[in-house]
Length: 196
Image (cartoon, rainbow, N blue to C red; front, side, top):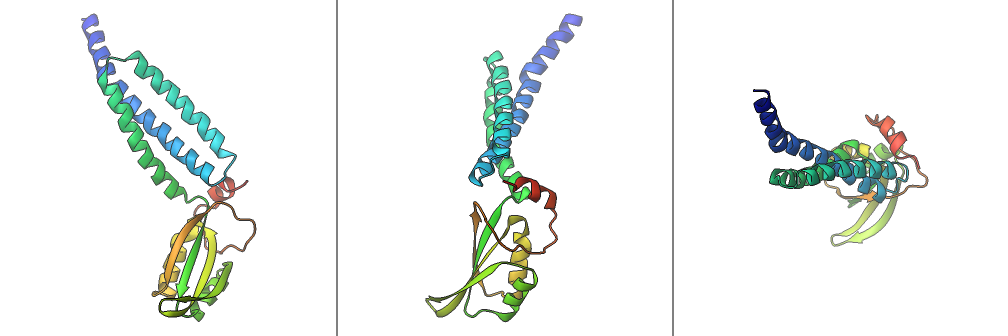
């Protein structure tokens, strides 16, 4: 009886529990790996090595389990599925953390007085250039801001200048500038993660 229960537990562990553990561990590993690459791209020298250590440690533990159960094809499937899912989860986590800075280029036919007033009121550092487009003379406004404030900025832009054309790009490093007084939900994270 005891041998039968032990045998059932071994089968359950090898064919269900172990693949689930590998799947979940691989999600964690790949999520951390995706964040590590993002931190490297953003020039964050403090968190990238820590993420690399955690990623490697999880990977070694998972690989050891797969090698120990080399005959179980579910372990391989769980490993690959965890890798794919971890990439997706890593990107979602990074989007939620809203790390780094972005530059927003706003192009308007004329510099809207309400838009420049709002930018000044919110203490945005912005630069305005005269330019010429296919439909004539335009103004180009460059604004650098924390990514965590991007949604609020876009909402404000759509309200004050709904016809404006804009593009958004990541910024690797910002030396100096004036930042907006939007109330941020990620002040703690911003102060820790963006510190060089």
